[in-house]
Length: 312
Image (cartoon, rainbow, N blue to C red; front, side):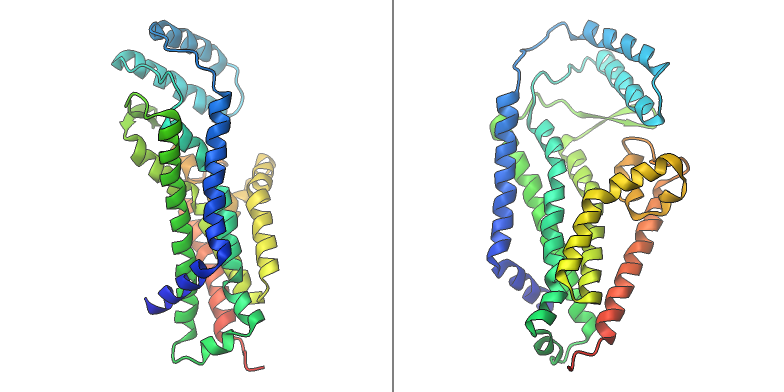
């Protein structure tokens, strides 16, 4: 715990760290202002049941001709949700509210990923470039504990940024758009609609969406430990963050082997709210692949750091 605390102090003493939190807050405020400015207040529609029934009739016609399992899934989901609302007399939300804003701001996790990757990439590389690694290693503490404390500190930093994103998106969304009418979130699970708590649903989705962040952070940490080059770690990790999923999706159209690529497995939400990227993929398969990549990344990082001679 002392080592972890020391690493956290190093992270939070940097002026750039406070700037990262400030940028994240400003992004949320700007996003809320833009959405508020662009909103079209149509008012409440009291006669909503015939509207949903007409929408379902149109969707059922589309379902006969629409290509792709993903497209069919979302149409079936919308039909089931509309039918559930009509049956249970749950009117659709008339106005954009805090939960809609929090859902949209889930995409801002990419900024958390950028900030976390930047921190992780410098955790080891900077110790070598500044020459402070010698002072670190002369202490009577194993290299494994030193490296592990640095990694845990990075994870705690990333979790703190996700918490800030979640809490501030809630506060800003509530101030700008209100709390809504209190209706539950309607989840579509195995062909059925199930009512869920909005907050709990969003917390789970934020964490699931952050899995790619944690894996790329681990990759950046591994590159930093193995090659002692923060620029390489940041550049490669950010490239994969921005392009990895897109390239994997393109390859998956023609081939089946991309299911073994890291980025085909980071989106676990596809198993709860969608269809798998490649037919035959399952939740257990993706978790296994993530575990394999995680072990490989850490094996390389720890072997490189423990075995390296830093006497020169």
